[in-house]
Image (cartoon, rainbow, N blue to C red; front, side, top):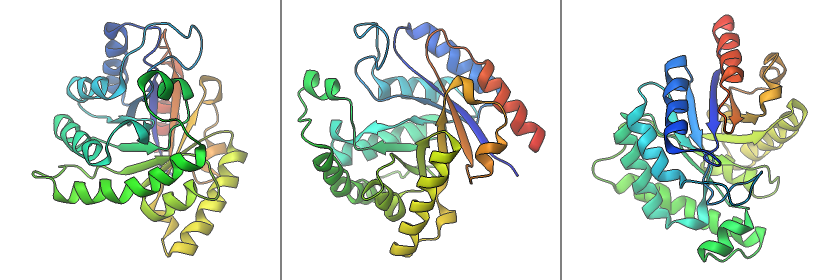
Length: 254
């Protein structure tokens, strides 16, 4: 059973040179996907460490790499007008030669909102906004000239059982959550139920999971619960040995 592997490179406490070297190396190693985050401040460690904006990094990644899909894991929906976001994604798809994921979620890190002047509100309101914005993104993507040149899957990240997974069933080509396998199995079952509810074939939605560097052994645990794409998360210093392990297991399974 084939599956895909990737890495998320956290753009905190690092330099531009170091993170660019990391994504170039990951691409050369054979990663299927490379991701950055969409936050304005570090999520762990020194809260005031160096940090870089995700979408401008993504444009550089698109031109520095040749093989891997690229994307944000995931975009904070509240930060950009949905039509603008669609246009940004389409443009980076062209820069990458058709290797773009449009990853989006409702947003959660309060400091991003407060310091950049966005209304944080409630989790429910942010989900409402995501639900309003998803059809606007899709509508704009259909109007853009030229259109995206790759498939540009729409990936929704999140684990909310009542709203997020319903939105995945209604709109997404891919869905991301976090390990361990038991969590994935539970949420995936609920997503299948939502697919039945909205008349969607569950097999149309790629199951993507972010995992820690200490969780890359025995990928069969994830494949057994239907995972198709494993993404290992790493920060500076960028240790790509876990990605190397995932690639070896992928290649061994064929």
